[in-house]
Length: 365
Image (cartoon, rainbow, N blue to C red; front, side):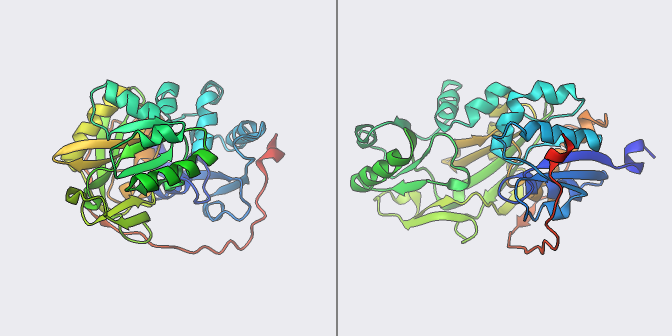
């Protein structure tokens, strides 16, 4: 029996409280046949995730100067071999200071800095994909009301260029009047935003995971055909008043809480694999798209582990475990390793945090 099957592998997952993707990574690691000793970090003392790990720690916010020193102190104490970020704010810090983390002998499965910077900016993402020859919805940078009113591809989606996870501050407009009103509201909150043409129907939306190893070699891909009309998975829906019947009777935006049919879906996953290669992705890449007239239209990319990480793990596509097995434990991962297909539905779960007096990782400094 190999060493890693007899001894648990110590890893750390931050942001395990459920507001980001850290909880998803935690769930996936718990499903793996590989044994893991999980150090968990979160800035909330009432984090449900901290109640579910082996060694819980309170962390400062990602913007605090003590954040990374506290994370590394917890890693040193527990001899952590791999570190997983659980929020985009933490990803930014770890990306900027990746050399410190790797110098500590810790495996950090994140994309290169340029890929992260590009994909975390929706406007830059659209510009880069367009330059590489991939299909994207019509779009425009909006800095003033005149910019917005010059966009004539209605209905359209307005969203912040940076941030906006879980479809925060995202809205649909169908008329010029709605566009002017929504643009004023957005410009009151942000110096600029992006507008994209609304494409496809509610039953043509996919979230696609492309997994590459840390050398950039493709391992596999998977897709969830989203059910976005349920209350849990829906951020916004409205009757289609645009006169464009090809968009279906209802227009809708996902909440980011994905559920639906999961499987290979090569018609969408293969183009997304080509996209990942063109971007020189390393590790996880999550592509949001719609399939329209047999063409993939990409409207967003997340350069990180997905909010569907645990769903994928349920069918045998366990991304954090696969990367640890390959790069930490030295296993050979076969190209297009097998996994199952099915339908996965989500609900709410309650956790009693009986004792929320978790130790503060700053105490390790």
